[in-house]
Length: 391
Ligand SMILES: Cc1ncc(COP(=O)(O)O)c(C=O)c1O
Image (cartoon, rainbow, N blue to C red):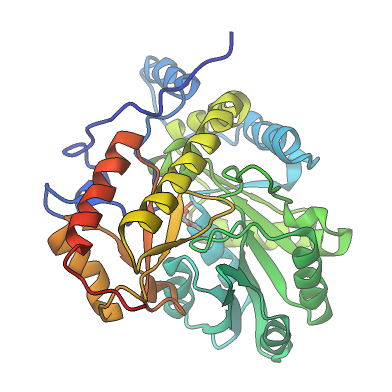
């Protein structure tokens, strides 16, 4: 019989070294981070416990089962057949972005990102001495679109060498369509720009939308990209430090591997590998139950804000448990928004400005049991009750 996961279960993670519970005082609900508060899938816990029972945890070999698990997940979830040798280990998606920057660009080169976007992309590019080239996404009637003329301008710049595509996109929740992916691919190919397709949120796509791994768009773009995935967001495994980079082209794969070797980053975590393999081999049932749960959470927040908090609204997501809230009509200055809700609602939210092109917006995680989410909404409502929203 298929396993049933209880996403209503409330874990008490404070004092377990969970990073998200160390940022704010104890009475604050931390909703700023892209991590769920759900327990992971039972087969993962069981596999970890079985491995823990054998009392030696030394250096780990390159397991042949790791690429097979990744390839199983890609074919069963996304209908993408990959060769096991395309799969490289990387500690995290963020690390893969850094290694790609080191492998395929020089200091001073430009790297395209589409803002507002996951804030670490900004810092990773800046810290590497490369230049951030922003293709600003355009909000039109409640949905973000790509300004393709601007994207082409950014890609055509002679120093642009790399694009980091966020697919699906955090925080605006778009699942890029085949047409959009086709146009992005054509432009990157035309201007010889390598793509890192960050597909860390690809498991979390809502009904009516479909995630298409970028390499499925064409053989040509498959040869000019890396797909970065990690079971971390889906299965609450970020502390395991085990992710995969899928690189169909051998030359690029060798280049990335050289960078991993020179950064001494190839050593695989014993438990991370076990967790990733259990997730990708046995975790399908969990995702099938998680996605409708998060989607219902998103609908709950949308309806609640529309009814109770004038001036604060949801940009309707097509994927992910990160909600992008439009707070421009709340009657506060953009820089006051996150501090206001921290002080008056005791809720930690991320200031949208850190994502670039996001001033006046807030990012909120809804990867919580519904009872916790409902309490959070009530706290937001009573905090906002004294505000004078703009029409
Ligand atoms: C789009 C995106 N990429 C990467 C990450 C981080 O993933 P990892 O822990 O694998 O670096 C996040 C986490 O918020 C994210 O939202």
